[in-house]
Length: 93
Image 1 (cartoon, one colour):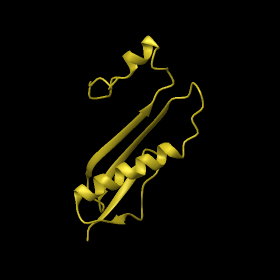
Image 2 (cartoon, rainbow, N blue to C red; image 1 turned 90 degrees about the vertical axis):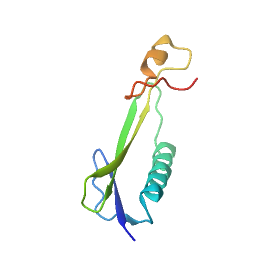
Image 3 (cartoon, helix red, strand yellow; image 1 turned 180 degrees about the horizontal axis):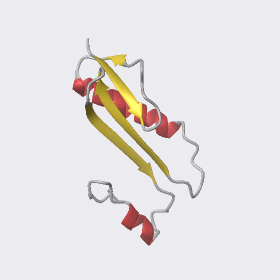
Image 4 (tube, one colour; image 1 turned 120 degrees about the vertical axis):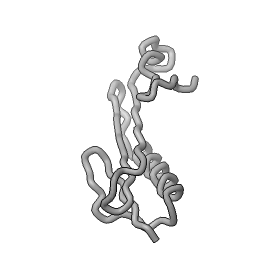
């Protein structure tokens, strides 16, 4: 079974996890992202940003997951401008 690694912007996963395939690795990355969000202290006015790169062994990055939490409220006009992800797709209302 292939071993996938889940690197954060300030942490390189040296151990990895054995998973069946790339689709399983993407699902695992989403679960890790959920844990990251759940375990984060959400101070008012604080921006949180994470990037997780999924690698197969020591090979190149297969996929990346980017999460950004912005401090602006949903009725703040600045929130609408900031709620466009890095691909340029507006966030859902």
